Length: 569
Image: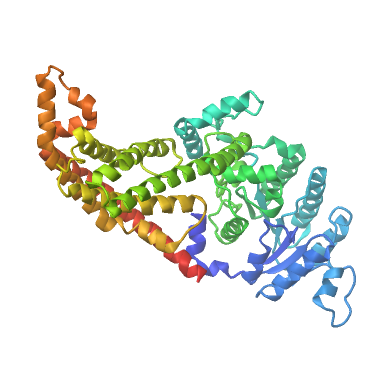
């Protein structure tokens, strides 16, 4: 709703009347570039490192915003941006009083928005947080116009959440993939157990989610807790306080750690977890900040009554799924990395090998068919098509265990129908003897061309190679080939049904009961029992569903591929 408010009120995005003080203006997760782009006046505070200030000054030059920076001495007349950057910066740890005094005197009639975005490793984070807090405390008490406060909360903390998040977390734990609890048991033996995300609620109290990552250490937790305390206290003193939870974000500093990078790449396997790119997180968090400053109904406004002050952090939390995942955020790091490596290395290698095997088999079957050297089409291509068709039963397993994004039911229906046709064609060498008429040629042509294109597309796509003409063929050849293939299947079965009936009668006469199924295959026996009327009815029900699914996929994939092609051009 908060994002919708900003979209519905585009005038809110004009920040030319706002003055922001950004502690840690150069932070990767800070809103500096967006605030400048929206015309705000930004008072930037960061370390005296010229590289930081060169970037900030360059961004300010290319924006409608206004930038104020601390300088250690007046720059020479006509100084370049590089010369100004060399004089800019401050140290919150060693110059806390000086920074506080400068901000107290700066624009005394303006309402400042004090944004705390500094970060440091280990104990330094606590120290710099204390320095920011001391400055902010005095500014809140002593400035004529009470400032607003802005924080970015981490998702890796303990927060008051919502009852909906609690219920969804429990549901995701129950319905999660079967491999997750199995992997959890294995990791438990290595003291890396996965803990269920049991959101705590006692006596109808507010639910609390524990997403703390213990590897971040106590300093990180304490520094963030200081910000929470200041946010709650300042709101009670009449300040607008924007303190929204940001999602896990793949910033350069985070993904430089290889273990974190691997974990981030695999977190989407724990639905609904999602790791965001820095640009997306920055844009969303900036929009939430604008909503908090502009919207009088926002939880940031001290005039809005909250059942509990800690609900301030839950009102517009953009937690990236950490509250709703089936397992605690702090315990899915190693499993996420394992899931990513397994899927990206083992599963992709297997799927690529499988696709190349199928492509080779169908290509060879098509080549033999086109050569026309055999007495009947099925005698040459049939054995290969039979092997490839039975091998396709693996695809039902692929869909069922989730290594491919296909419907297990649809895949089962499609492959089962093909297996049935193959059993009919092979029963007592009907197709080899030419007793099924020209329909078998239609089957071989439609099937082999479809599968050559399909499996070549899968093999290259698994390797990350996308070729638009091949993509178009993959999602277009089915338009004529599926109806032709179905026609061939029904025609061949219609021709074979009298022969199947004779085979069944002979088996019954020998007292073997349903042994025709043992001889020709149980799906072939079912086909004989259904008859052409029952078979046509089944096809009439299933074919539109399969064809409709392919049409929907065609529209989606080709639309996306055209967009990518146009963008690349």
